[in-house]
Structures are given as C-alpha cells and as structure tokens.
Amino acid sequence: MKSVPLKAYPRTQVRRGEVKKLRSSGRVPAVIYGRQAKPQNLEVSAKEFGDLIHRSASENLLVDLSVENDARAKRLALVQEIQHYPLDGKVLHVDFHEVAENEKVTVQVPVETVGEAAGVKNSGGVLEHILFKLKVRSLPKDLPEQIIIDVSSLELGKAIHIGEIKLSDGVEILGDKNIPVVSVAMPRTEEEEVAATTTEAAAAGDVEMIKEKKEDGEEGAAPAKGEKAPAKGAEKGAAKGAEKAPAAGAKAPAAAEKKPAEKKK
Image (cartoon, rainbow, N blue to C red):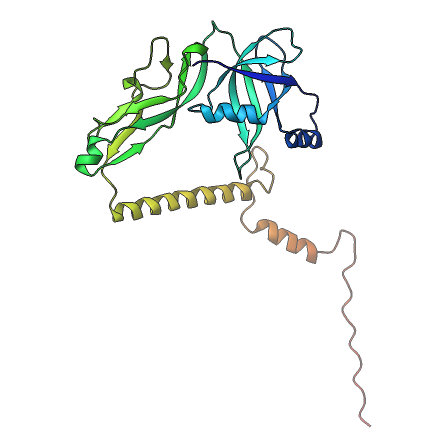
C-alpha cells in the first residue's frame, strides 16, 4: 500500500460545542495513537481527507502525516477508523494508528469479486459472498487496499476458501484456511425460503422468551443455601394472611353491635 501525504494540525477543542464549530469551519476532528508516542488530538481538512477517500479503493489508507509544529517531519499512520454521519456519509471523526515501517500490522481488508461464475452462467446458480472482509498481516507498505477474487471458474456447488487465496509475498491472511469466502449454490425454492423465514422467526421468539424468563427470575433474591424456594403462590398467600391477621398483642375488633328493633306503634 502506497502512503499518501496528509497535513494535520494540533487540536485543543474537545467539547461538543467546540467540535461542532470545528466541523462547521471545514475541519474534521481526529486523534493519533500508537506505541511511539502518547495519543494526540488533531484536526484535518475535510475536503483534503474526503478527496483521499474518493481516490482510494477502500478506506484502508496509509498516510504520511505531517503535524504542524511537530518535532518529527512526518509520522507514518494507518487510518484505523472513520466515523460517518449516517444520513449523508459525511466524515465526523478519524482515528489514526501510528505504525513503524519495519513492523508488521494487522488490518481488516475488504474482499471484492470480479467475473461471472461458471456455475451462475451455465447452471443457474447463485453467487454467495460469505466473507466481505479478511484479516491480513504484513508490513505497512505491503498491505493491499482490497482483495480481488476472480470467480469466473467457480462451478455450481464449489467454493473458494481462505487457504486458496494467494496474495503477494510477505502478506498473510489470518483465520481458518477451510472457511469459504465465496461459493456458488442452487437458488432456494419458494418452500425453502418460507421454511428458512419460519425457522429464523422461531429462533428469534425463543431468544425473547429466554430473556423474559431471566428478567422475571431476577426480580426476587435467590434463596439462601439449604433453604427451599417458596412454593408458587405462597408469597401471595402469606401477604394476604398478614393483612387479615391482627398485630401481636392487639385485641380483635369487637363485633358490630346490633341496633334494637324499633317497636311498632
């Protein structure tokens, strides 16, 4: 992965209102961290950083970061995370991870497919993209922006596994080598779609029921060791009896006196 230059500036605004004004002025708040130095708050130009993203095949960027008034002329860093505004995709915040040229790093790299699978074209199959990112380890300069898989020769019922993907020397894909990344399968029939939907709905219902039971069980304290849990309805019966029973030493209420019957005139 080729590094690209990016200018950054130290940032003192950390409160919500201050950061909001910073974004309004065309800057994006950022932070850089790593083993070589303490975390530092930065800001970068929203336009300049946006142009870098649009020119890149993915958001995996390696930048030569030049921080204003910094003792070091440039700091090599990976874009670790980009926070986007959910409505328009506007960049809200950037995390930079400072790295060393001679130390290997591990990142998630997106997977893209090219070509039309033979099993789709000739046998009516469906291409299933199972893994959209793979964990890759290498030196920063050797990191791929994305992993391209040619599926043209993939027949019906076949799959391409992690262990079958070949990258350049020095680049290692981590994970179980037998896990499929893409495959070609027969399309589901209408009955299979209905059955799958029913199964998923039933599984979701089971989870909800388990959750409700757990919450109900947490309402009362657990019985002490050696004690038996009260029988169902015992607590209610005891409470009811407590309301009716008089307090210790108290006299029972006297029976209501009957009024004498009036004499007929």
